[in-house]
Amino acid sequence: MSAPIYDLDVYKIPRNLVDVEALAQQASRYLKIAAEDAEFLSYHATRRDEIVAELYRQPGIKPDTSPDQFVPQGGDPDVHLIPANAVIEQLTPPKSLEERVKRLHFAAAAMSVFSQFKIAYGLLDHPDLERQYQRRKTQIMSEYYKTEFALLFPESMKRAAARRMPATPPTRLATPPPTRPSAVSRCVSREDVDQFLSNPSTLLGKRFVHSPQSGGQDQGDCGTWHVASYTVCVADGGVEHEYQVVLDASGEGALPMDGEEVRELLQHSTFAA
Image 1 (spheres, one colour):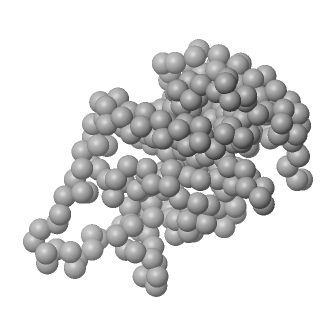
Image 2 (tube, rainbow, N blue to C red):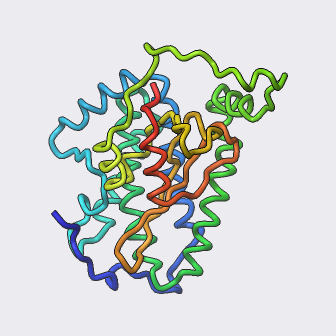
């Protein structure tokens, strides 16, 4: 089934009504929730997956969080965003793993709708304001990871810092760590890759382990990674996505990647346990 064709003029925001700071703060709220809940739930992966399966069996809960699932052709995105924000508020702070999974789901769906309708379509006539929005959002999230996130998950930050330290003596570089077959997680299948890229919001909250093949990819890219956020862009050929990807081993924060780069990562990754 093809995506609906929207009259984009309906969603364009007049320049004098664009509040770049408010847009960046709203997007960052969704992204902070996704980062916190995804990290917390990664420590309870088995139970997390059970709760996700239970959640998606509930009537009215859509596992596909692409924006077209929530906003019909010509519809008002606020009809989805206002009640979604209310649910997120009710679940903050979450009091159980079940509430974290539900909050993450609503935040991912809201970010998907917000990115497409408020930013990609809303700022279509104002590319300079969209660049300001992207810069401000990046600033907010960069500060968040250095402060709030670091306080919430100090061990995670210590592990990231340890990966940045140079290995000594040099002879140790030639000896890879032993592998334990029992600890190997499920590989990301071709079907998984297609599903993730068709519905990018489903990547939020997932963590992967990248193990590039020796043939062509940089072995330095090995390690855990996740998608921190993504942006919906309108291009000549339709809608495109730009992803902000955190490679834990690099210690450099989120890196921008296009769909093909994320596909390449996924094709040589396993799901993190």
